[in-house]
Length: 118
Image (cartoon, rainbow, N blue to C red; front, side):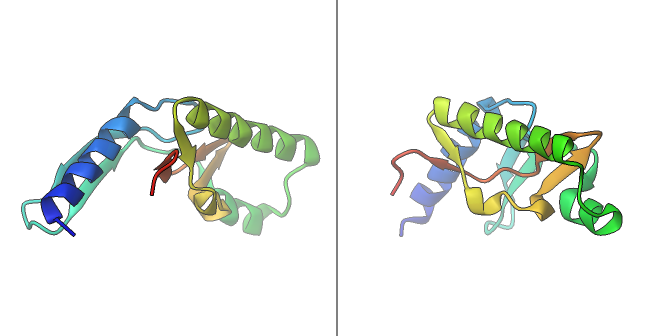
């Protein structure tokens, strides 16, 4: 695999992610190829709240009405990203990647895939 082509593809994906803004998605602010030559660094917006897995361990299940709200927020993010030609990597939608605060949810460091990607 051509290293330069891979880096170019990563940069292209990051540029695309920077344009994807939704209340339930953590926004990508910046990215760069680290000077050590082997790392690609991404800078994400600060995601306030507690990770949902830790919240659930500490507090037990959330009330049904609140859980429904969380599910609707996640569905909205999925619908939004698909409408922009992107789709969320649903394996990344697990409680340890979801910040929870005051009934609102935010996907931390969303992993996105191009529609129709190889």
